[in-house]
Amino acid sequence: MSQQQNQTQTEVKKVSTVAQPLSAPQRWHENTNEQQVLLNLLNWEGFALEDAVYEALSAYRHELELHRGGVFEGAPHRDNDRIEIDLWAQSGNFVFLLESKKSEYDWIFLQNQSTAKDVHIISGPQKTVSVSNRILNCVDCVSKQVVEVLPTDDKTSLYRQTQNQKTKNIMLPVRSAREDLARSAIRQALFNLEILMHDQLLNDGTWRGQSHRIFIPVVVTNAPLLCCTYDASDINSNADLTKIALKPITAAAFNHSEILRWGHHYEDTLSHIGNPAFGMRFHDDERFKDTHNKTVFVVSKNHLLSFIDKIKTMS
Image (cartoon, rainbow, N blue to C red; front, side, top):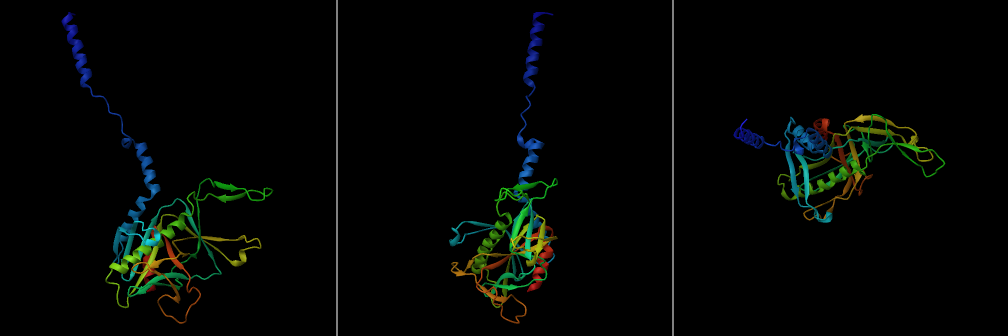
């Protein structure tokens, strides 16, 4: 082979080498494993639950006016923080404040069979509000205590040493690392409702005359809900429960004591008037007068529409 031919082949090889593009490194978002990790994060944060709740309410067969992602000025007594409300809806005289909360824990509501099953509803005519109590037959569980338990296939349990080191360890179910997961959602629903009532007072011209506006705060969750009932006779001399009964539920009424304010400048404390709310008033009811009891309803997302149907029958 001549020297000229060798040189030509060498040049062809160089050209071929240059012409072949180098494969670009794979970006993380193109990696299916990384995509699954991101999907896990998004599901853990619970963004999709808000969409699922909105879509469910959009399909509600009766008139329902939806308001999503509203931003409001915060209340002065809560540091004026900017407030974003996930979703609220109005149907007739009812205003539903909906707080979505994703959870991998089961939520268990304790109900003492011996105590009153009253719920505490915020309502009022002519741009005034107060709290009244009544018993709702459509709600199976009325509670003021809730715990979260992590269900595990292998029955993993958490052990805690008692104060008396001579006694055996106590076996407890795994609980949430985030303290008061359910209760914090309940308090947030009440604080957001305080802001929403203030906005209704200032800006809603349809709330007038003798028509009541009925405010219903709701925490919507994917978490399985259970009612844990017991009787006063099931508490022993050591103040320990000796017997409980558990059953799945679709909704719980949670009575929480919280000071809320209302008025054009939040100048008034929301008062409890101690009367049964709506319906026939056969007698005055002083049991809850001047307390700060308010009810937040915790509802399974799969039963939200039926819950709204039931609540609207109480007016």
